[in-house]
Image (cartoon, rainbow, N blue to C red; front, top):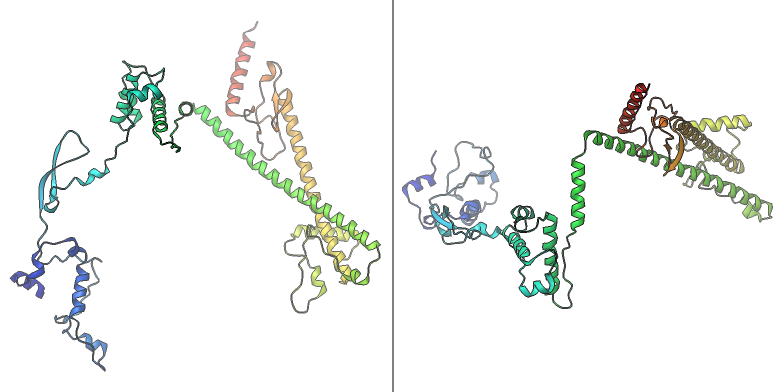
Length: 466
């Protein structure tokens, strides 16, 4: 359905501001302008006593009749289409232009607004060139002279660097190797950056320290050689490397476990030493005659003991027997071990909770837990020692004499016959998972293949002998 604005547009009854061309502000801020005009035309106020719904039916504020049927304007696109009205569209023109980045004077054509005619090409500001230094004949003879480079070759290098914006791969490709010596990319970079550093030093003001870029050609050559070796690896070498990396990870995990066990064992030993020292100190103090007030004071339970009993310092009435309860941090295995030892020693599990009995009973159970942990750590150490002994004996059977390299044993073969190693299935170790602690040990995949080939060649030789 056509609105009043459409009718006025058809009859060309509007004038004034709508005659000019459309600008960018008209497209973006069209809604804001309408809202301002609407607020300017709002002159009526709601009378007192009139409801808001009734006042909303009036159409004198917007000068437009209210709709007869309800309409939903929220459907469709969120952003309303640009309402251009009767303004003219900005004209475009097919015009020529030149790019300042080009030096050949090429002329191109494209569509452009008439208002922008005569302006520079907008993308020319992105054309950035490298400032290659220029030296004089005197500077070259005094500071830049090199026995391995002539001035003509140096000028040729700087000309190519300026033409190709320091793209040294392209410079090396376009380098005149027939007229001059054959140079590598690292040689070209080293010569260029050494000259740049010398020129910055010479041209720097007195009393200032300029920043100089130093190119390490030797490091770059070694890096490329390493990359080339890495690229030229065979699939067997890649498989062996992956195998060794997995073994290294296993070694690191076992090392962390051993360090953790050693720390826990050191804590237990330290706790046992501190408890014994405290017991001796208490015995020495008890032998001396002290006042009654000091005798009634209860000695503090050491923090390094096996069990840390909670202190009941809250307000209210508490039973002394609550101090004899074991904390929840003690596991069921430790509780059963404590009860078994107390039953064997003939100690009551629930004694009379007097002040002295509670203190001594808690200290006894704490010492029992510490003793239980020390026994467990001792049995673990014995198991590990026995496992390492069996492993050492198995390696002795597989090879000859033993030499130590680093932290693990390495077998050195004796004679030609002992060079053939046993397979991993022939070596029986009681450990849960066998781990090779030395890189290059006889159980890597490539070493097995070499041993198999050596053993097959030796058997063929024995058969050929008469």
